[in-house]
Amino acid sequence: MWSEDPDRSGPEAETSVTPSSHIKNIPFSLAHGSRIGLFGGSFNPPHEGHDHIARLALTKLNLQEVWWLVSPQNPLKDARDSSHFQSRLMQTIEVANHPRFRVSDLEKRLGTKFSIDIIRILIKRFPNARFVWIMGADNFIQLPRWHAWEDIMQEIPVAVFARPEHHIRAGLCQAAERFKSFRIPQRNAGALCDYRAPAWSLIMSQLHAASSTAIRQKAAVESNS
Image 1 (cartoon, rainbow, N blue to C red):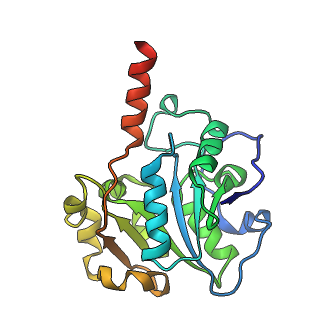
Image 2: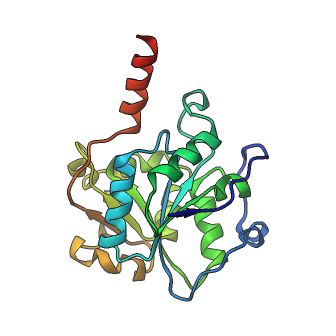
């Protein structure tokens, strides 16, 4: 695993951004045809379940790297429930212990607030790379609550990894129904990066029960005892 030098300054963004004004601020390059999984989240806190999904993505999706995009703040959650960004970033670096994982603070550096922003910026910055968006089934179920969620599905292939109590619902949820004609069978998930969006796959595999919410609740109970 390796990470970029964390940016320790600057306020979190409050508005959406445009790709053209930010692509020059991404200093590194990628080889033509690089296969990259984008794993976005607040990681509050990061845990073994996140690591489990990222490792599955490497193998099931035939990826070269998984980029953990640590967001400054989940727009759907109260900021008071989120740990300090720098703390979450450092914790994520500790959890994402794999040579093909990259932990990034790009969203904070570029001032993006929504997933669609960072997706468009990266696609524009690396037009010859092959990206896929990685998410758990629980987030896929609530995807219609995300800003420009249909645009996300139209911009990038999406890999949905089944998690406890969510894998059946994920296959029947609103997003699944809206894009049902673009669902790729799990047996073809290894080529998901090669599909033109919209394309998505629900990947049923060994499940991991870890939950950020449960970890936070346990920590709160222990701190009050």
